Length: 473
Image (tube, rainbow, N blue to C red; front, top):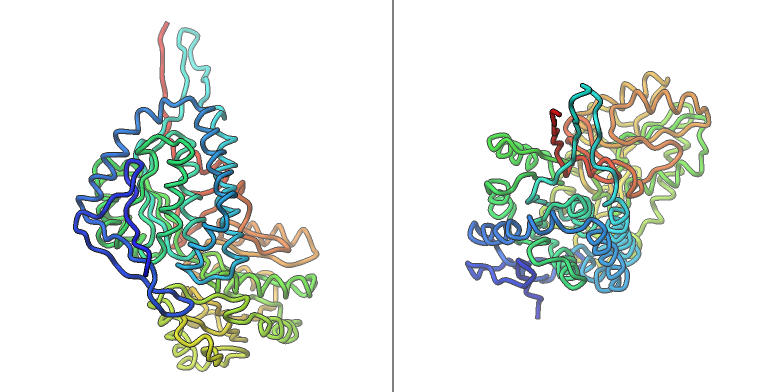
């Protein structure tokens, strides 16, 4: 019997007003997943009303006590890491090691922001001798948070932790396909003592519950992670309401390897950069730019390493049926464009995986940067390699993209590393590594990859606004 999942509003489980549910799918098997409540405008109103009622009390909550609650939530998440990981696996099908890593990363957000609640929140300005002028950062109030299906727990924690630390209350709308861990997170928040209404979860479709959350007049800021198309829709609604947004959207990140790079390490990290979470990571390094003198040899080594990434063992499935079909559509696009897969480009033949949403990790080599697979976000374990000749060529190719989320530079010439890092149009650049970055590192994009920043101290600035107070003596 499948799990039935309800909203979490005002510190308790709430049945949807329509009594309607969506039955999900287990991406590892194709079988039935959890039954998830389908929220409507009435449910959104209820969740936001609960948050509004809690907002003033939470804002006036002593900061040290807020910090202790955030720290306690991190502690309980680690104690419950197996349960949280199992919920992630049920919804996403990812390997246990990846699920446990995501639980740890999610806990680290609450731990990190627990230590920042007492940071200075304003400045004193010396303007006139008969005036006392100061600024203070204040919370917005109710924050609407809409998260994607690829790393649901991590994304919820990434937005909720700084929002709550800054004195806001939250209403989270997770993706309908992967809602279980977010609801459990809210339950744990209530368990450790967060006041009722500070952490609410509304379930349902993005076009209904998600859109209504953005439209609600009491929601004062929205944080969204997901596709460019949905981000644009949310942006239009937010523009009409004149509220701020944090948008973390897609990516087609360039991983640039020069001929003097540490060859073996660059190969290893190039594979990790596009196969982690089966490529369903917005910052995945799916454009591999390799200096022409080593390109063919480098690709051979990458292909050999990719063969060790086995679907169903150390490579999880595509998480939704729609995305599974989308990746297969891109295999068709590659064939139409005359691209030849060095490895992959098809589905696994293992009978044990039939029914699940698995694809083979794929490498297309010597691809022109104008090809669709070099320009469009596949959101699966699909890599294109692009040869380049000079440093200037590499920068030009890297920047010839609608996206600008992340990039990496591989070279032993530190001067070149910094030159390229500063010229590449990306919100985060790695040198001689590929990493999702620690919780302390600000993260966000340029161009169609969005705007605003999550993570790090920088994130707190996006969950507060500045007030200036001027006193004349």
